[in-house]
Image (tube, rainbow, N blue to C red; front, side, top):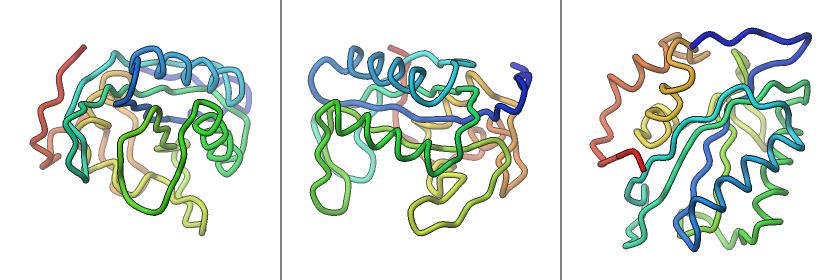
Length: 168
């Protein structure tokens, strides 16, 4: 799917996930809030269910990817994502992974590479996560990872994550 730049807008890609409560409703609400605060929707993937990643949980996740046109700077986009998580009831307690009402990750902002104490772009673990690459490849298969230069669809082909990720 081809994305056309609008004015000075950049394409910002987010991963949204939830494994608590009404998962679909939480993801839809987070997507709407991102559109209100971060930028106009370019594309939103379908929903996918997968097991927890990085920790053990009996509660499966629902995930999707959202791409928006935005003129906001990457640190501002990350702050918006964190504010939405907090508004929706996510509490960050300590380090590590855990069950959550909503999880929003800023994956990429076009071809930007950022190594800041508060933000790394592209997301450093996106290439290892099938639950991220599958929905992202659905909406932006030809977008190139700014570090590897590979398309998202090629990253998905090479992904070693064998988790069962299925459409909802």
